[in-house]
Length: 363
Image (cartoon, rainbow, N blue to C red; front, side):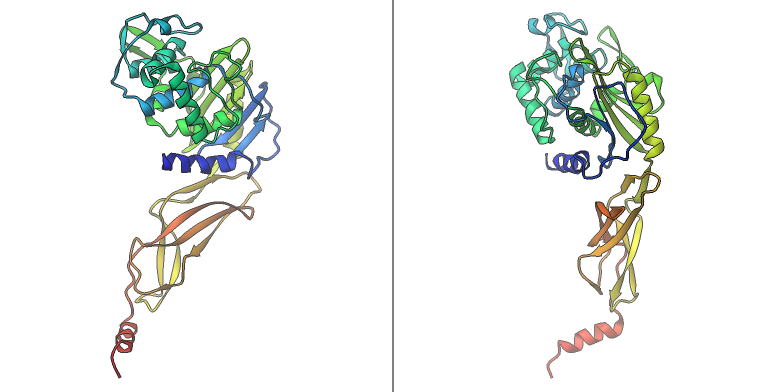
């Protein structure tokens, strides 16, 4: 998973405090909370974000991620007796019933079915224990250092916990999975005679909400991990043990989008500057961004960029060649880099070519 791990490393770099958020007046009712810009990983708000907490059914984000990565959506799963006896929220599975893995994932994410979680774990992992091993391995891969999973559904257990910061990291990864987000953003669906409605009321309460997962046990209280999008910018909010989570998430998003709008500093395939070319038919070559880059910027902050070339350019230079990077800084602190490509081919001037040819001839 090299690309996924690299992506998470970039997010975690910001999540773990390289750029702390500004002091702000916003407050929540949560025991622990965090608001994160998905693209950059920048923390926009945090409150006791590293406290180890019970996470209830927000666990199922990890369950879904592992199941989608390791399983096949079209697999037919036979429901075990163990699954039907699982306590708590349910999609009301029956022993011996057969459903696709995809149908069970809808039951997991919309109905918050603990029975669905056990059925999924048994099918994908071979057993709950083996599936939990996969969950913990994935957590380690994502850098969730303060998390431990003991089951696939989030029922209270002394070895089952996480933090708001770790759950934000998980959410940022889950958002990259199109299948998971398609399911998590569905408000209602009818599959196999069952009509399931999403427990995540934010999907109806606010424009731009695209998931993710609710949770509740008496010990954990209300837990909520959600994601919202506005003007191409995505934010993740996590609140743990929060009796006013619907309102708190809406307030967090209003604060985040209004205070930290994303500033686009580079666009894939667009010109991002120019560089001098020694001995070329033209004296400069346009430089094109090999990737996009944006960063959330508050009032009073300054996002700047500079070009760093790998070496001075001499003709010929070929279009598409990586010749350096655009370096982005926020108030003087580096926040990211993007490779720069030559936007066109620059051939040597005729006299330069002749000089080169002459130097290669015998006296």
